[in-house]
Image (cartoon, rainbow over all chains, first blue to last red; front, side, top):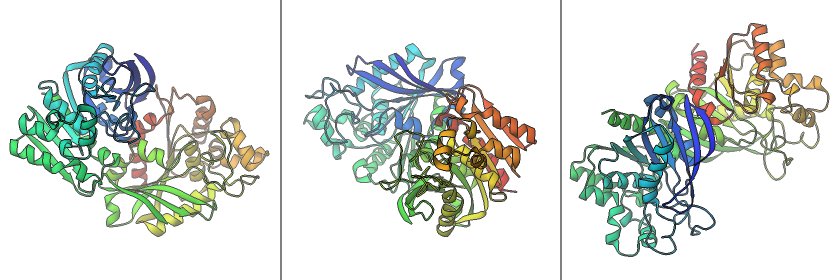
Length: 276
Length: 276
């Protein structure tokens, strides 16, 4: 693992690191914020999964998360959203290929060679993190924005016991029924919709739910509401009696101005769950 | 004036606007955060001047300032750092020309035609702001980072009564004696150093000081310490008995991770001064 940069930040360190990933078969870059508490003992870890077109860097600079993570003594990891590099398949569209991994393991050509983001986030990167940093792997929580909200919710529901809590900002909530989903799942997973349900938060909420609490924030003026389908997830949460909160925030859109406005609430929510 | 974007943010609105500037003779873009309070009455205004290579956008996304401005009911304006456009002179170096206006009125060719950032910030943009937004022009304060810290300090000291308080993050504190200053002042103002003192915070502190309080934050691991010369300003402040605080923050560098860490303190400092 190589250190690309380390900056002091809110009493801790915001680092950027690169490592060779066995899952994706290429070098991967991630950001990690370690609060001051990590100098003395392992700290809980909050995952932040990012959306379409993002790298590790967007949330690290724009989500305004570090202040609150520092206050609660949490580490934050900001993974990249796909494999990258000259040898990695790509597509001209912004919503397929590099920057658009959708947190799945691709089974279809040309994607299967590198696009294994499910394994990367669930298995490969956790190993790198716990081997190199003062992190308490028994205390983890997960959040994300848009495509990253989809990733956070699907990982949390399919890895019971891994995450104490899950939250999402404007998640792609029902990708099997959306143009942000059908196109990508067809490309990565093939044309059989039965393969897609395991990566659809609404389906997983209907079938499994989540053992902890769930917090969802959605802007009422989000320019992508038709693609996100928050109503499907809200229905599934309520139908399942899922413990948690779904908030429709009046006037907010899909941007990081929305995320940064409510990140303090999300981090406090996860800190409470991780303290139990 | 044209609205380029408006995003809900911490209960207020983060907007980006463009207008034709009489000072610079070209279109200028700025960011403005208006807190919720501005819907009911004019609010105080905190100026944030940015550093070399920045546009209006860097601090708007990376400084994490809006949360604290919202809490204190302050507006924030994020001006650009120079005139821009095809017809505007430029230089291949990052520290001269577009993105490097140094908040002066250039008198030398080819810069004199458009590089009038002093007039833009002190006269032109204030007029646009008060004409279009619910701002209390009797209550203003100013801050900035690096070249913007230089701008904030020089404007505050040379416009007595305009700003209730001034602060700076890692300001270019003594440009007449630095390679971040001599080169640009020679190009913009000519080779006579007597013309430079009016744009040197250390000289102005020695001669004038500031009628309110001053807050300076500087990182001890700033990679540009030799260029910034904080010791010159610290000496001038102490020698003058200038009310205020100069803080050397251990381990912090020149990045926005440094700025965002301490922005809450700066905004609280200005809010106190503006409440008097």
